[in-house]
Length: 217
Ligand code: GTP
Ligand code: MG
Image 1 (tube, protein in one colour):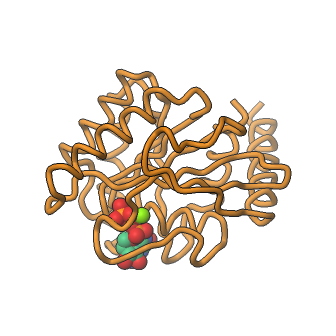
Image 2 (cartoon, helix red, strand yellow; image 1 turned 30 degrees about the vertical axis):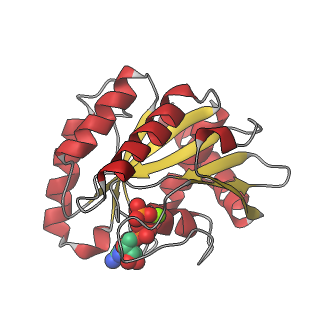
C-alpha cells in the first residue's frame, strides 16, 4: 500500500520536473479583471504579502532567472502576471501583487482588494492558490484575513513558507510546526505546508509536484 503511494509520488514528481524544465513563457499582464485572458488552462495563483518572495519562487520553480520581475522594494508586482507552462500549455501560473504593504497608498490597497479578491473569488479555472508566508515572520493578521477570504470563497489553497535560508534550522522547525497548526484550522487550506528557499532551491520538487497535482484535479 505505502509502496504504491511512494511510486505515485515519484511519478508525479518526475512528471512535474519534466514539465517545469520544458517551455515556460510570459503570457500577459492584467492590471484589471477585464484584461484577464480567456480561460485556457488550469491556473495556480501565487499570493502573499509584499516582498514575501512570490516572483522569486515563480522564477525558481520554472528554472528561469528573470521571468517574473523581483525587487527589494515591496510592491514590485502590481498586476496579475500570467505565465504559461508546457507546449501545448498545461498550466498557467499567476504572479499576484502583494498585499499588506504598510506604505502602500490607500487607493493601492483598495485596488488590491478589488483585483485580487474578485480574481480569487470569481475565476472558475483557478485550481489552487499558494499562500506564501515568510519563514521569519510566520502567519500575520493580514495573512489570516486572506486565508479567511479564501475559506469563505471555497478556494483551495496551500501554505508555502519562503526564505527558509534566512533562519536557523531550529527556528525553521518551530515556525513550520506553528504554521502547519494554523493551516489546519482553515477549512480550505491543505493540511501540509511546503517549506521553500528560492535562494537555495529548497522544496522545489515538492512544490512543482503540488502545482501539477492541483492542475490535474
Ligand atoms: P511583491 O511583488 O512586491 O509583492 O514582492 P514578491 O513577493 O514578488 O517578492 P520578490 O520575489 O520580488 O522578492 C523580494 C525580495 O526577497 C528580493 O530581494 C528577493 O531577492 C528576496 N528573496 C526572495 N526569495 C528569497 C529566498 O528564498 N531567500 C532569500 N534569502 N531571499 C529571497
Ligand atoms: Mg512580485
